[in-house]
Image 1 (spheres, one colour):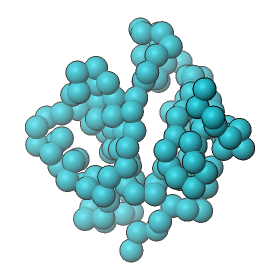
Image 2 (cartoon, one colour):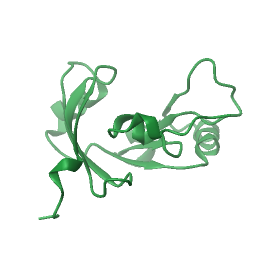
Image 3 (cartoon, one colour):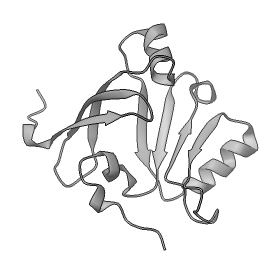
Length: 132
């Protein structure tokens, strides 16, 4: 249907978030992708969602160079969100990821990452740009 190259498929497993599945890059060197995943750990956010709604669209994800600004705005407005920032990273530097909770967006979770960070789970972690 999409004319995808099966060499662009990457098996993905996350013990942190409790899921496994397949990631498909639409173009080998770009981060346009689709992930088909299923929860593997009971009690995780994804597991609770799947139990409530069944197999369906769970989350959208994008990258942004303004991730800290979005985090600040989410905090200021009281929007539920979760930040992934290494403990040793200075606060003026971008966090790696941010999730805006479904209640803040009318039912859909939105994940955001700093530019290039998604390569960490998209088959090429060596492509993640380091921060100064």
